Amino acid sequence: MRPPRAKAADAPRSGKARAGCHFPAVETRLVKTLLSETELQAGISRLAGRIQSDYAGRSLTILGVMTGSVVVMADLIRRLELPLRVGVVQASSYKGGLTSGPLSIAAELMPDVADRDVLILDDIFDTGRTMLGMLDHLQSLGPRSVRSAVLLLKEGRQEVEYRPDYVAFRIPDLFVVGYGLDYRDQWRQLPYVATLEPSDLADVGP
Image (tube, rainbow, N blue to C red; front, top):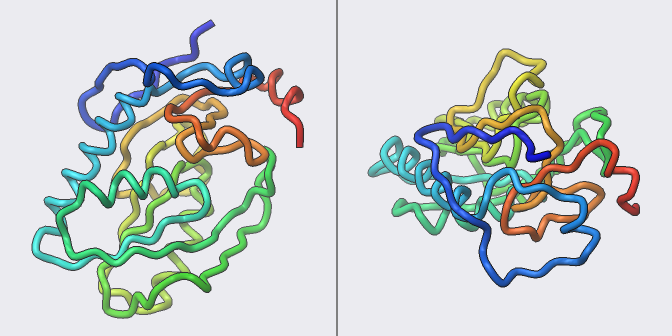
């Protein structure tokens, strides 16, 4: 059965996954496409347009939350015509599975953000605790401003009142992989976002 459709944060777009892509049989057997490559690229373009408008004439520091944001960050920054500084930060409350735990932040690779306009970029906004912890950490470093952007907002899962400033897509409460998102370090390379059924997760090796 096809999973419920995701909703673009702005106008929805349709499209098909890229032809000619081949992935291991275990992947194509288990995953079900939620957002095609065409839909994702249209969503990133809309996201870039909003950010470009809001930060026109200003220098922006984008911090990608590793590792899930690497794909969306690469696509996003190539669409921005702004003076950019790009860095990464490791922040996670998941340890390869489904259960959320204590938030861990490793900021060794993060550039100086004092008196800078900063945009935190993450792959997915789930409970919201990771993003809220990141914001609290960054605010302590004295930036001029801090905003947040996410590729996906999973509806109905939030445990905090805060919501990201920029959202490319709103999706149902499904477990998703692809386009940088993983389950036990698998499926990050898929050029689309797909869903995994809970019954399929047991079939995925460590």
